[in-house]
Image 1 (tube, rainbow, N blue to C red):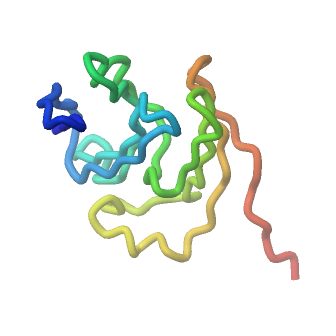
Image 2: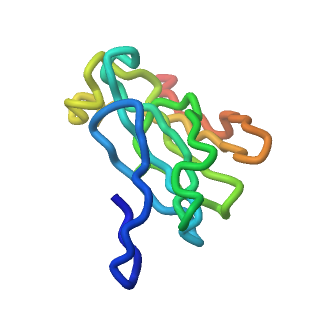
Length: 127
């Protein structure tokens, strides 16, 4: 539920799962969130949605990235960078601790063009 500064009762955000975790964009116009469900093997999937006034829920869409919003940072309202685990065992949305030692790939997410691209990879031990 979204509540305004003057206790206004705004629209609710409809999600396609459970385990909601969210992060606000820099200007508070959008919310980046993850949820999981049976179809994602109970692994978190990122979504972006409008989060301001009458635009709450507007443009709600999956980013097709399996990670949590606290592993992401907004550059601005149009670009996000996220650390994405190289693999997730089934149920990682419920039991996050099982990925604590999994290396991350850094992705750049362009919200305007709906594109994602890996930009940094974990260093591998070549010994």
